[in-house]
Amino acid sequence: MKKVLSLFAALTLMVSMLAFNVSAAADIEFSISEAEGKPGDIVEIDVIVDKNAGTWSMNLDIKYDSRCFDLLSATNGNVFLDGEHEPGLIDDSGSYKYYAFNNEIEDVTEVGTLITLQFKILKAAPNGEYPIDIYFPDNGEGWFFGDVTEENSDYTQRSVELVKKGTIKVTDSSADPLPETTAPVETEKDNDKETDKQTSSNSGGNKYETEIITEYITDDEGEYVTDAKGEPLVTEVPIAVPEKTPISSESETKEEEKSPETEIIYVTDAEGEQVTEPDGEAVTEIVIIEDDENDSMSTVVIIVCIVAVVVAAALIAFVVVSRRKNDEAEDDGKVEEKDNQ
Image (cartoon, rainbow, N blue to C red):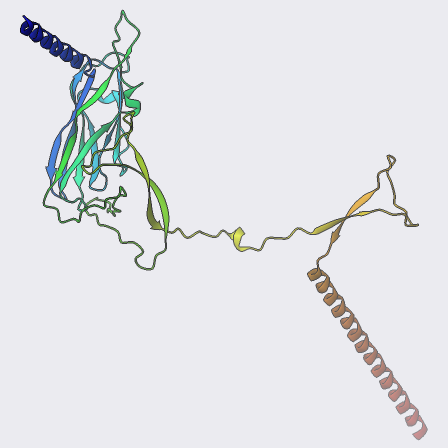
């Protein structure tokens, strides 16, 4: 009898645990496909909705290692219509945002491919497997709503879960292992995105300055490290960037004009007494104080003017005296001519 009771208790416990696991399952479940290639190859990754209890909006970020992969395109799948999907920004940030909502605020219950991402494997990517992950802002709170019907205009918050991360496996690469820090390898890409190379620091005599960037923290297996709320942890990493040469404006090259210095003085009458207002307050006025440089310049100008006047007066006197002597000589010549006649 005891054995039967023990067996019944064990079965009850197993059923209760199974029921708990079922109840704890998420309303919407995602998975990400896998890909493999060598540097220079273009591979595709699908973000898949495996389970969908119904939602009229979705907001999530797809994370990848931008040091190793270049996101080329993002194509909407079959879960939401193209007109309901707002394309995200394609750049080198290592993150692509997927956002969509049903215009009629009705449950979307489709499963299948949510979005297909096309990556190019960069030459800087060493051999290995690199995770493709999903980050749900605020753990999905406020972005996944469902259970909307004609009879029920309210909606419920849907729970979400990524049940399988994706990976891109890189093979046949000759690149050196990536640094242990989370700082990305600086790359240069041409317009066609056909080449990439590691940039050398402080080459060619260029000057560099430090810039702080924010990067996600990963563990030894390349997984994103999260806090208690499930949000990824970030760290600030200093990188060297070419120092920007400031362009001096025309106003900076010109000397600033100095404002004249002023002084407040009390007004006095002819007897030297201070002049006052009817209310008894002394009358004042503002006078401009000439600086020493202006004073010395004024002095030089005055001296030059005086010298010029003196020289002019001397020339005039010389001309007058010379003319008088000529006149006197002419008069003496006339008198002598008369005497001879």
